[in-house]
Length: 143
Image 1 (spheres, rainbow, N blue to C red):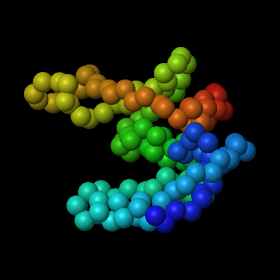
Image 2 (cartoon, rainbow, N blue to C red; image 1 turned 120 degrees about the horizontal axis):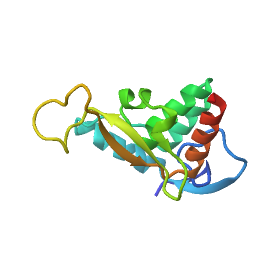
Image 3 (cartoon, rainbow, N blue to C red; image 1 turned 45 degrees about the vertical axis):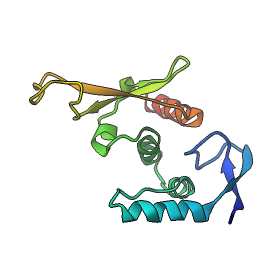
Image 4 (cartoon, rainbow, N blue to C red; image 1 turned 180 degrees about the horizontal axis):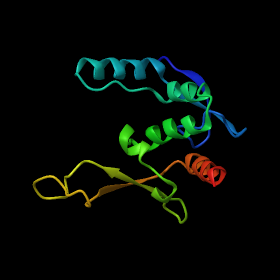
């Protein structure tokens, strides 16, 4: 197996700036690229690997853009869902933080389009503690 030690931040898929704590993990880059190649042959959407996202976030200059891309990465939100988020959309207190995304998907609803006053939401748990910390800091700087 072709592996090499990769320096990554502890407990985070998205902490590009880092907290000073570093741990070493083995990342089989050849296997990850093979999986990506297999997915690209199946007409599935392309995706970025975790190390690629980390490098990408390092080069995003604006904090607002970093939080936007971090939100897309950590929640799987569509771009229109992420752009519609407000501070009230995030529930960061408690043992299980989550975000409430306004969506256009209508699975739980019956047939037909929703009315203009009817909004459909989906709840997405936030499992990355460093992302939750970053969102808290971002929301406090906006106030």
